[in-house]
Image (cartoon, rainbow, N blue to C red; front, side, top):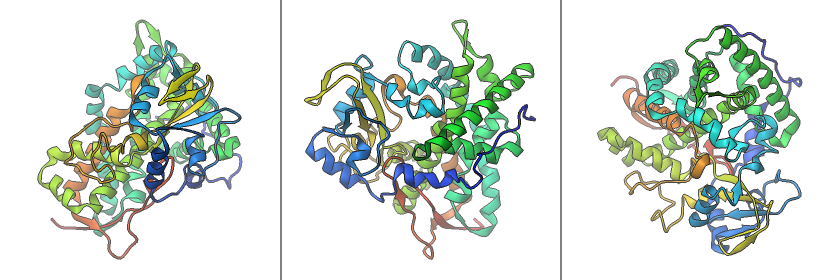
Amino acid sequence: MASAFKIQEFDDPSYDPFLSDEVNFGDDLDPYPRIHALRDRGTVLPGSYRENVGLPCFYGPVRTFTILGSKEAEEALTDTSRFSNAGYRPTLGSTFGMGSISTMDNPEHGRWRKIFQKIFLPQYVKTWGGTIVDPVVNGLMAKFLPRGEADLVEEFTQRYPFEVIYHQLDLPQTDVNTFQRLAIGQTDYVHMAQAQEAGVKLGEYFRALIDARREAPGEDLVSLLAATEVDGEHLPELVLVSFLRQLMNAAGDTTYRGTSVLLTALLQNPDQLEAIRNDRSLIPNAIEEALRWDGPVISQLRTAVCDTTIGGVAIPAGAYVDVVAGAANRDPEIYPDPDTFNILRDRRAHYSFSRGPHICVGQHLARVEMTRALHAVLDNLHNLRLDPDKPAPEIRGIMMRVPAHIHVKFDQNA
């Protein structure tokens, strides 16, 4: 479908949003010993998580705290009478827009979230697996299958969840490269001017796209969202545009990271990869274990609504509270031997998609994409193994985690 508006590039042609990952999210090879050391000091500590691990903090002159205990994390993520999502307004709100449901609290949050939930219910998302996800995955793999080797990040995981979104939105191919640059640039809060510029330009693009799809609706996600209603209400344009701005990051970026971590963990534990080859019913266990063991987003933010106490620590109203999902996911009281990747462990709910009313609305799509990707790997990349002649994959980051490369070899003929 042709676009109704020409997408606008960054004003500064030398700006590269893809270089922002390390600056914004850190490049620590293994933050977990540091996280464990912080938790040994207490389940709730003064200072933001970023400050506590040596990164610049974007919160401004407010009191900050870091939650490292799983019980305290559960409390902060689920008790909306005491903890708010308003802390995301200076960052996500300034680029995705103040209509982002990630910046809202109830009752406003619940009213609009119902519409998104209606579209992203498991029974609908599963249908996208065969119609959208599989063709994208197979198309990407076809490009490197004849070689018997690949970089699974550069040639596969970094591309396929974004390609899925392009197909869901029915974006013109001519717009895709600029669209991805703007989408990634939105979260470059170290370079806030470029992040806000990206939000403005994507907003202009999506408003034009919404107008075009309302005039000539199709089967794409923009048309569906523009037409869907709950209890007689449609999404306001502010909320719809904010959601579409956020989709690339919420659905694309986290899925790319989660899938990359999953494949890295399995390749580094070939006995577990072999177990899945022999019994694919283990795939859901493997996905949940990868999300627990090294989830794509380590920390989530809440703001204290009132003076309160958590973990025995007094939190004043207005304070920013970083809930470290990476610490809760490795709580030894919940997950025995938590630093070990083990797909055969008893499955218990993790914190990587958050908890409570703000639990990730796209979690079902993320699981479908990770499941389809792993099936395709098992179906097509026979005798898959790490390339011994190239550097081993390294999962890096303090805030968000991903390996830059996964160099592999596989048998070309089964």
